[in-house]
Image 1 (cartoon, rainbow, N blue to C red):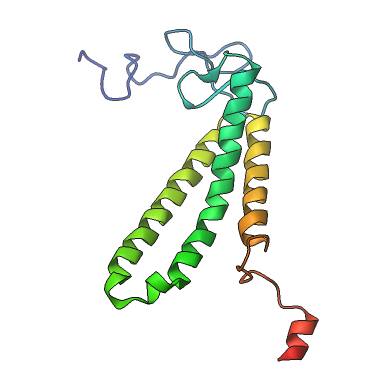
Image 2 (image 1 turned 45 degrees about the vertical axis):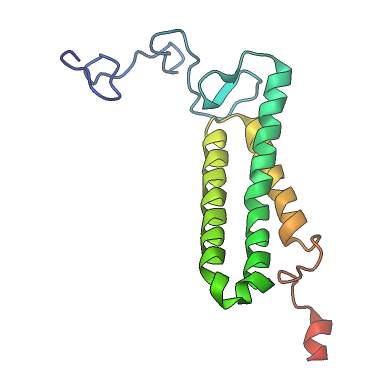
Length: 166
């Protein structure tokens, strides 16, 4: 490595990349896409991985949106699965509590990883990505926390009839 080159450096010696006339930073080397700093509409976007979906057409853009939607829905479905596992018969067994705790920890780690992926996708500042992320979270809540899942009524609000029954 030469002078001024280090980890994360682009051999510019700590200088800011040049700006285009509209104030957008110009891509450094290789002709990549510029990063947006405000929300925008359009199918020409990169998020999560370099060049994905990029300029590969509407079909790949829609596939990327579907990926964000499913990932966001899973973020809201995994806590319901964790609750069921922690209340199930395996949780009561004395000799299996360690394996159950490890499984719950793994599910929690997967949920956090997926949540960070959704956050990073939204940070592409594409309005389409933002909309499908919100819709995915809403559908995930509806399916798991909103009472549509069978047998899980723990999130049901206590109404006046419930209060009178007790």
